[in-house]
Length: 158
Image (cartoon, rainbow, N blue to C red):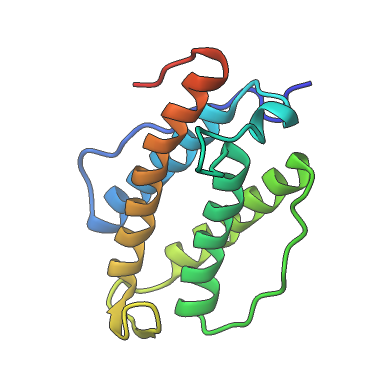
């Protein structure tokens, strides 16, 4: 039984204010990732890529959930995060969707000019940088998701 169905890919935003274009690009990459996971069973989501890598679409779901939560809830808002259970794929997807919802609120209400300290980069960064870094994470991992999906059932992305 598939875990993710009926994914509608977001359209890119080609014109608009900076925050609108950034939001559109992030939504495009989020929905593209889910689209690459659409129609697969839990077992297929957990299939590993070629040895020695342990990468799977499931691991990418967990990782991208962490990206959303870490950069926006922990770094930007300065909050602590509880560990999430994500063993069953359905829980991992629910955690991912919830993290994206929280991120949307933070990004819509935060100023792109707000500066926070990043322990990862050991320097001050602003919300604009965090936004772009999250987009960068999705762009990189959507490429991985293409290869993983093709190895599972031959489906190819664009």
